[in-house]
Length: 165
Image (cartoon, rainbow, N blue to C red; front, side, top):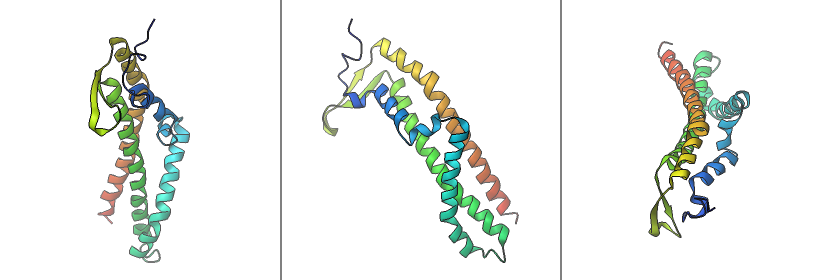
């Protein structure tokens, strides 16, 4: 029996299921697949690096001896930005693959940007891809959304409290 993937004219690296597997194996995009503690740990490392980069600016803007609360608070707010950038990049990457897997027709390029075409997936392949989206990608996107919501809430509360100082 011939499988739907053998009749697929889309190059291997542009097939949505292969793009999904590439993201799963990617050092960066696989973060969200880690258990909660290692995932939060990686975000904490990014936040710590952000804090190290932002702290000199905060110390110059708000001398620690005169305004310690403002100095630390502004550094904490600034450290949120790298975490937000990381989470947005992860969300965009996983959303791209989700959209390619969910689509009935996929765009591909045979040899370059000038010869793009669309290919309609067979019903079996579409059903398989939609199962991957439902059971593997949606939970990852929800995790990223919750993480973005948490860091965004911290950022907004901190920025709002900043004006009360």
